[in-house]
Image 1 (tube, rainbow, N blue to C red):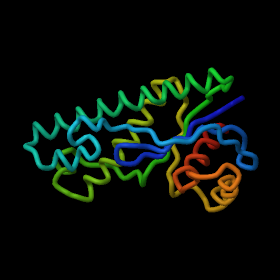
Image 2: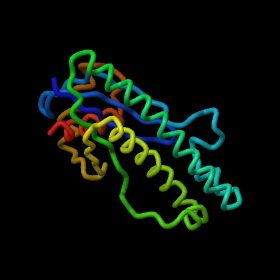
Image 3: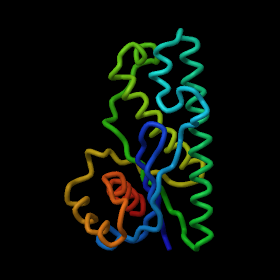
Image 4: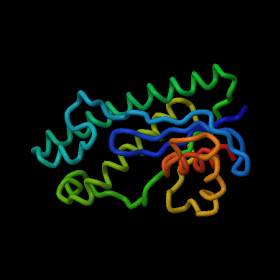
Length: 184
């Protein structure tokens, strides 16, 4: 059965769903929170915030370390998820990753000097980590801007939550639509 993953990033974690079916008849196979920031690594949940307090060479190193650590965690959990779904007979055909606004970021020094850019950079970092990990798992990735998901698509799957029970938050709804787009 063709299946796709849907991922929506947050600071240090992401919501994951595994979906099969269509927008009119989706089936949720799995939904959970995955950790993509090492709690043992200082500053890993908000690396740009932590880096803003450091001299630039240390800031660069901290951000680089956080990205590498988050990539390793994301790859580990996505690889395990794909393996487990395949062991249950599912063909994991793709991954939908939700994106933010898509505004280009300036170089790191300018990001660290502007608090709003720090927030944007952290969001982009965790989304990029998820895209990278899915590609490393050999999955075709469909990126979806959250703002491009229409109310009709969300409404079409809203009642699914009543059938499967909680959690059925905005995370799972957006993930489901992104995963279904990846299946197309």
